[in-house]
Structure formats: C-alpha cells, structure tokens
Length: 85
Image (cartoon, rainbow, N blue to C red; front, top):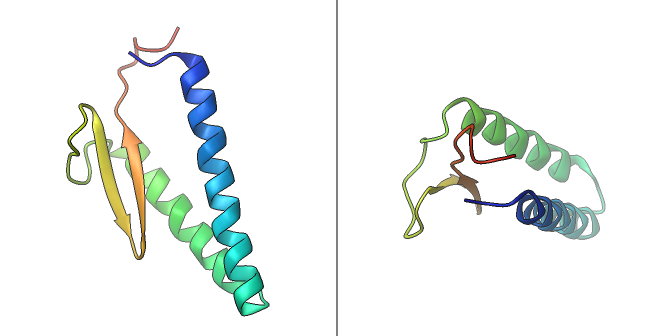
C-alpha cells in the first residue's frame, strides 16, 4: 500500500521530469511547438489510463503498468479506492 507522502513525492518527480523534457525540446528546437504537442500526448495518455487503468502491459512490479508514448514511457500505479486514507 502506498502512502500519501510517497505519492506526493512521486508526482513531484513526474512533474520535474516532464518539465525537463519540455525544456530540452524548447532549447533544441528554439520553439515550444513540439513540447506543446508532447504535453497533449502525455495528457491524453494519462486521461486514457485513468479511465482504463489496466491498459498497457504489466511490469515486473505488482500493480504497475506501462504505456509507451513515442520515445517515452508512462508508468501507472494501480490503486484501489481503499488504498489512500
């Protein structure tokens, strides 16, 4: 069972990684167009995973699935409604 503190820490890492990816592409392309497209792809995948949490192949870790997005992977942790306080 995951704690709320763990989830907050995990979400902060995810947000930091996402920003780093956008910053890389913004500097490389000298434009925000590609990072805007990536943001749309990431958000659509997150929405799809929230609606269908078992989408994507399982990993070696219990209750974790992976969704491949072009050159990136989005990992989903399957939580039951009772797993958070």
